[in-house]
Length: 213
Length: 213
DNA sequence: GAATTAATTGAACGTTCGTTTTATTAATCT
DNA sequence: AGATTAATAAAACGAACGTTCAATTAATTC
Image 1 (cartoon, each protein chain N blue to C red):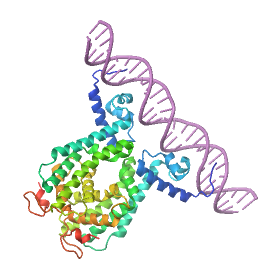
Image 2 (cartoon, rainbow over the protein chains, first blue to last red):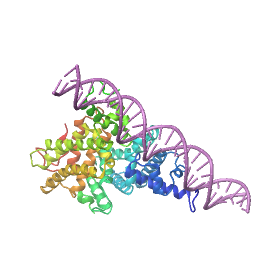
Image 3 (cartoon, rainbow over the protein chains, first blue to last red):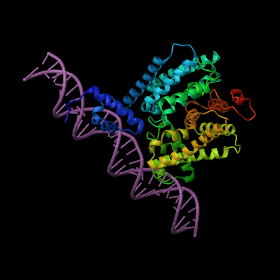
Image 4 (cartoon, rainbow over the protein chains, first blue to last red):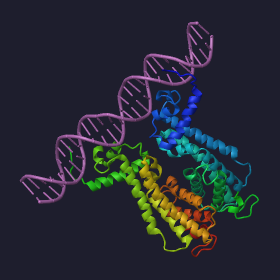
């Protein structure tokens, strides 16, 4: 046998990407075999090499596009406003929404970094650092403006990101909490954590009631 | 060749455990080969099977002992006091200290769960749930006593644990911050996050200055 | 409709994997 | 000192791995 009727490179490649994200998220990159991935797509293992020269190329492509998507999403969501509270709220909302929507891809991007070559690892980390820097800037601006009360913006940024990203570990869509409820809670926790005192049309300090749905 | 002079089962087993934690943390469980591990210990791969019947048994042993250590540490650190703020502070301090001290083992226990059999996974998760429940209880007691202002104790507990455990991702001993400084910061962030208002000999609300070193 | 390109199969390659078996030597016990 | 037990080495097993190659068929182009 050879080329199958109705076969289409674009569709196959998309199917490979999708299946790979799911399998790597579930089994881990090392544990997923190319044969397993091919079976999931409904193709022989050799066919995968038409789209990705190596297994690591596949992983890297998934990660790079995930990070590019994250940066793009933030660029689109970033408010024009200079108010640090508004900016922080937008960052949190975008982060939670993006990560819940792309749980599996996030899992891959966060857990499989060690399987990348040094050069490619550097590339991914550069994007991640750029994204985290946006949060640090917001926290610093807010602290300088007196809107936040933070003693170490770098540490606080890491703590917030870990807290927010952690949502993908326990959150399951369609269970007890809705995405909107989770987002509201994280927003509230974030504002308390940074000691936000000035808010857009809200009594200070920035409390639970201010963001409850 | 066969038994080597000065060989000692207990010492070898300990060396295997130590080397395994380091290698799995660095390379991942799947990526670490038994030959690699044996080489790190200075022994042939076959010798490992005198101490652990399978590779998965080795992983499970490391994880189980790590979780047992965590529960033991908390039992020892748990204050007799009924004051929720004191209990929460003890939980945070113990958690941070334990996880910084055992960064590699924590990495293994958190990242390699999917390599366990269903039964063993359940066992580990049961211990983890028990540990997390301790925090949820503190948060609930504190909320009922009016010491905290929390709208969802389950969600808050998960957020706090993710935030605290995340310290192992970015923290490197001997760099900019000391363990004491990091602990103090996380304690401060935690108390703000839960809206702690009553404290042991501290002005309310529980702020940064109250726990700074 | 012939030639070309796109997409895939099936088989194979060399390597590495976790693990087992057997033999051998060091340490301990009687 | 001899017998027994503890700890290892060396070699081998079959299975699975990522990847390559040649052949083959479907779709497209001329």
